[in-house]
Image 1 (tube, rainbow, N blue to C red):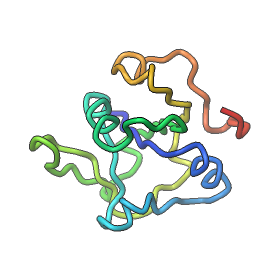
Image 2: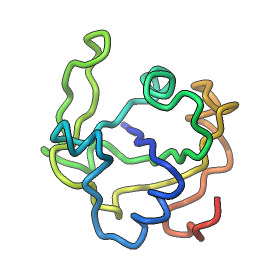
Image 3: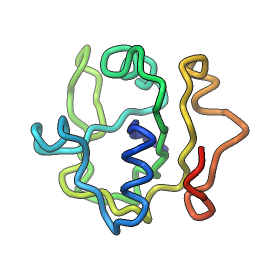
Image 4: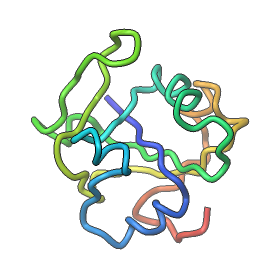
Length: 124
């Protein structure tokens, strides 16, 4: 199953040179990294990123994170993926610019122009 992490373009540019990333200030405060499933993305975008235009959508294969990934109740008692530990950058299978007009679930998850992590050139 694919899970998703949203970050700014500046953060994405910064973390590409790292081997792992501990997460956003929000993640660090909570003690785990917040991720969303495809169905949860629209609510996450509306609640935490409304009005922001410099966003990237990172895609990760949930199973690749092993036992450090826990599914815990959050918004509306829905089970959300939470990573207890740093995210190895090598586990990011794709990264793409996320524009407000893309916030519909179908556009987010099936967009044809995904920028592959291994060939990402730092320019969205």
